[in-house]
Image (cartoon, rainbow, N blue to C red; front, side, top):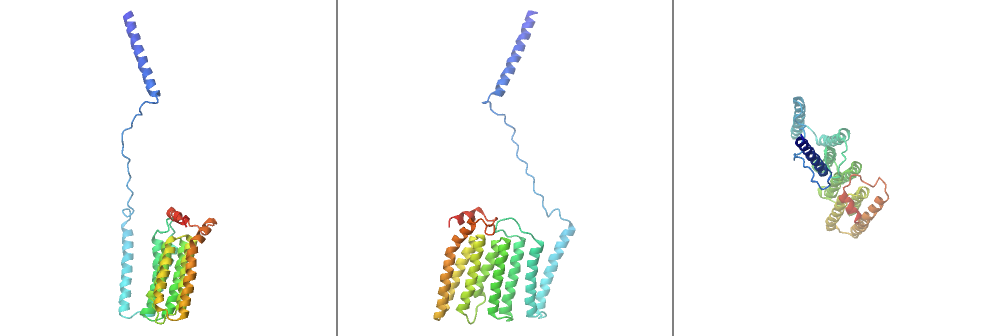
Length: 295
């Protein structure tokens, strides 16, 4: 009986020691953590939005595309047959541009993205401006409905309108489009009797538009385009200087524009330091901010 009791006591003592060792191993800070079995994260595939569309949806979109293509072909056939006069063609271009801009404003919304983002809204606005540019160009050179000088004035007005749209939409792409066409206007619409005085006023107004865009939004791409476009256009104009008045007008323009371009970065930094929300662009990238602080 004593041997059995001693054996039971030994077993109980061993169990006690084992439990104590387990407790010490659990409480020890140097105990290696238990590793969970490796499991790859499950990636849910994004649903395809086109796969969920019904057959009626596809038929409606296909019908709209085919109808638009048929209208384009009908318009081309009518032009070839001279059923549509040049005046009606120009009016059609103006109407198309107005329809594109109206569609952008009415049926699309602004996206909170970077200033270089090009979405459906920007495409429609740019296409509307392009339709108006092409209509003025065709009316002046193809159909001789308006003089070249009036077409240049229309181009300048469209450039100012494009700059205003770029400011309101916070999109540098639209400003680049408007200014680019503005600086190409002397090349696209060559005048048979160029006037350096009028040309200086045009180029000065165009340069002022570019500097205002930069001061309001801090778009360096606009400033560089204004700088390069101005000096390239001035270089082309110096080939036709003939009188002392022309040289004085170009010299005065160069002095004023050069001073404005030199002072523009400093003025922009002062406007940003003022803290006004009118001159700060919430969609600017951090890279643009760092470059701006360097001036």
